[in-house]
Image (cartoon, rainbow over the protein chains, first blue to last red):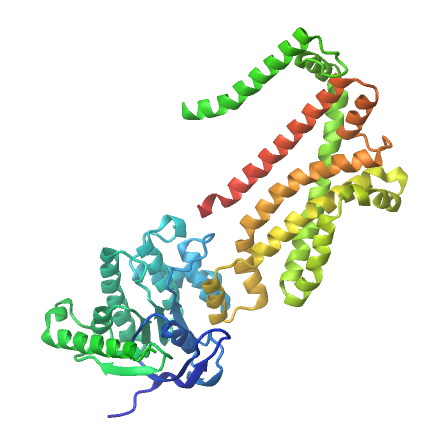
Length: 255
Length: 253
């Protein structure tokens, strides 16, 4: 099997802040077009690992290797993180504006990105006029507007109620795979929901509760994207079991 | 109906207080130089309306000039300082010193600097010094209040310093700056009056001079009339700032 092209690679990455337990050393390779879920106990450094991949965290030692591409990185935070004074299009166009793309083109591409997440009707809505689920979609559209080859999501569903959450997961699923058909985007998302991780990702990485090292790296069976009925498949149940056990084991090592 | 009752309630209370005041003055035969009844104050208001209006305008104008100076200096210095931690550490103690120094105490000095024949300039400068701090502090706090994740987003897309200032920090600072403006507007009027008291030469003929003049001659009704004008001026300025704040922040709520 040919080695897949590299999207991002952490090698011996350590993040240390005074007064907090250090995280790492973390070794993790994400190939182009992979969909990877990061799970682990709270405080295991999942968000830190994600920010490391985005180049938003200062490394103490180790390296973050990220092939130089024009495509760049998209990031979705736990909360929508929108600018409250700007409408949906302006929020989504921000990455393009900052990159110096012309105003008209930025607005056009932002409108397309919002249409792709099902918000074509709410282009001029302000964040305060949007529901939590819609605001998360705007945030997702903003992350995708630059056509990144690496998309990072930090618990994007954590703050939503279960119905909105289910709808957004289905949408994400569709958007991700539409996108992957065009550009081989690698997707890494943090979650604390094992079922969500197994259903969405081709690979689930469990981080150790004590220091954020990789405790387990589990490939989930079958090609992506999965149909909704895959949740009834014994192979799915089996994979959920495996990940849940690995997650439990990762917490037992806690002193 | 609710709204009407809400507007009516304070007006009724004021009317009631005025009535009690009027009746008490008449029944207890209080000398008018101690406390004239509201009717006498009303007469003084009408009698001296042209002079009072001119003085009120003068005070308003000086306070407004001071406010503009304070906005430009306070906002400008806050923006400059926000660009570097070292600059902020250097400037903050000075700004606090300016804030805690009683304006009355620096008034004689400022009067000398501006020249005794330019009391108006001194009054504006002193009022601006009082109004400076809430604006400086408000803008500086606001510039640093951006959502940390939004800051990270700007890091991710490699925003320049200018882009970060214009697209993120200034818009974040707007509500803080407006809160500062509201406080500063009130302080500018207080500052203008106090400064005029201290300059006390009659070279600046604002409402404070009317207060002093009436007080010195024991014309208490005139004094109260000037005081009423001053209160009205403060209320008006507050209403203007509030309306401005609402208009600017309409979209954010």
